[in-house]
Structures are given as C-alpha cells and as structure tokens.
Length: 383
Image (cartoon, rainbow, N blue to C red; front, side, top):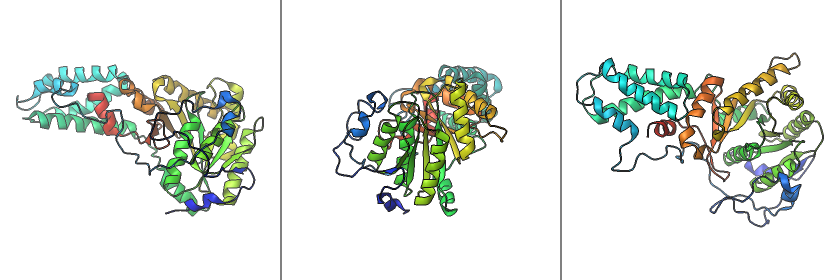
C-alpha cells in the first residue's frame, strides 16, 4: 500500500524529475555499470539518459555471498574438523573443551575478530557445552552454532535497534517526514548507499525525497540527480557553495509541504580530523535534528572504520554548540559481499561503538541491500 503514486506530482521548489521515456542503463541483469561515481565528469552524469529502474521488493534477509551457503557435500568445515574430537566421550569436560575453544578463538582472530570480542563469543560457547552430553556430531555442532549465534546476536544487537519502515510509518502518522542524514569519509559509497535505502523505502510504499547537501565535491549534485531519475523519486538541490545545513532545512520543509514520507540527506565526504568540514557537518546535524544519522563505511576498511566512527562522534560532540550532542545512530557497511575473510571487522565495529549495523551493501544494483544477518556471520566465521 502506501502513497507511492504521489511521486508523479509536478516540480515545485527544488523538486526535480525525469520522464520514463529515457534510454536504458544496465543497472540490473548485466554487468555492473563501469562508473557509478560521476564526480569526475563535472556534470556529464546529469545529462546522461537514464531509464527508471524496475526491480522487485527488497528482502533484507535474503541470502547473499558472505556465508550464504554451507560447505559443499563431501567437504569438512573448520568447525566440523575441530569438534569431531569431542564426540562420543560422555559429558563434555572443561579440560576436553580447552583446546577446542582455543582453536575456535584463533579462527575468529584470523577472521579479523578482535581478541576481546572473540573471547566473549568463546566464553558463551564453552558455557553451553561443558557438562552437556552430546553423543552425536550433529547434536554437538548444532549446540555450538546455536551458542555462537546467540553470543554474536548479542554483540550485533546493541541497545538501539533501527526499524526504518516502522519509524517512517510512525513519522507519517505524525504528519511529518522522517529524516535520515548519511555521513562518512570520502569515496565509501554514501550516495549509492543512500539510493539503495531510497529504493528500499520506495518499494515498501513510501515516497522518499533525496536532498543534495554535498555542496563541496564537484559532480555530487549531478550524481544524486542520476540516482533520483533512475529511482523515479524527487530530488531537492540548490547547487554548490551554499550552506549545507540551510539546504537540508529547506529540503525538509519542502518534503513537509509536499507530503513526502522521508528525506534522505546526502553530505560531503570528509575525514574525521578535518575541522572545518566536521564543524559544518555538526551544524547540519544539530540544526536539523534528524531522526537517524547513518555512518557509511567500507567493510573492506576493517578496523579503520572503528576509528572513523569514533572520530566522527567525537567531532559531533565537540562542535555541538552547547546543545546536547547528536551522534551517529547506526552504520551501513558497503561491499560486504566481498569480505569473507574480514567479516570480523563488523563485529568489532558494533562492539566498540555500540552502534548497530543497520544495512550492508552486497552488490551493484539498488536491490543489493541487506540486514547484517547473524546466520551469515556465523557461517562465514565457522566455515
């Protein structure tokens, strides 16, 4: 249901739309586009002919590359080989478990899980096994996987859980748009991630407005316009060199006037130690009081992402201007489908920052966005 049909209204204010008769781009079904970032084209992206993307509804829990499949028939997983020595010996003793738990911890550390995080997971596994009578390999393996899933679930589910569709619906009930600000360092895929979230929102019957507040990088507005055209959603922009905080405020007011359900605010990439840009970001966040501030980071960045989130939060607090600090609420990890050997970094990020991974990017199309599924993580860590 929802009000998806409202997307066709005419262009008022900063609102933009392209018609559906445009020539195709290869977003789906074929190889990835050669270039998703139009920043070096200095506006060429805005003139490209763009077909409206036609895709299905996103299933955030659908399997994808990382840990999506169990080991092939006839092969033994790492977990299987490690646990086989415990089978058939009566109740499991702490002494018998010790070498198995050490091997499991070493495996987690190999997968980039921090020692402290890995120790918590291993402690939970040990507690579930010691004293248990597990006569078959199947019962042993399932008990270990269940214990790991429970422990990882606790790590991956910090105090705040983000349910985007529910929260947008609640805001709609209050007759206001739900506002999300996307932040992060340069070149991690903020605009693409924002567009995937826009597609997810739209495919569930809501109308998102894209708000172009990267007034710093040449081509950023044009890049977001291409996404808006491909998604057939409205865009609010005021060009370059203007105050990003004011553009966001104007965009939110425009969305309120038009009855749009959500405002997705794109911001300039910046390093956490760039004081002028961090001050500007803090101003945008504190002036507009968004419902959600999402940090976009590369899964491939490993533990650097922890430093980035910590640095952004420190700057948002430092430049709050006397107000209660408004910090990052959650994380989007891009390129998550490519990091089998580094999946542990996601655990470290959540454990260290206390912020949930709200979405992971798992491919090149707008539909390639998922939840951080605990089962996927367990398989990737134990396979």
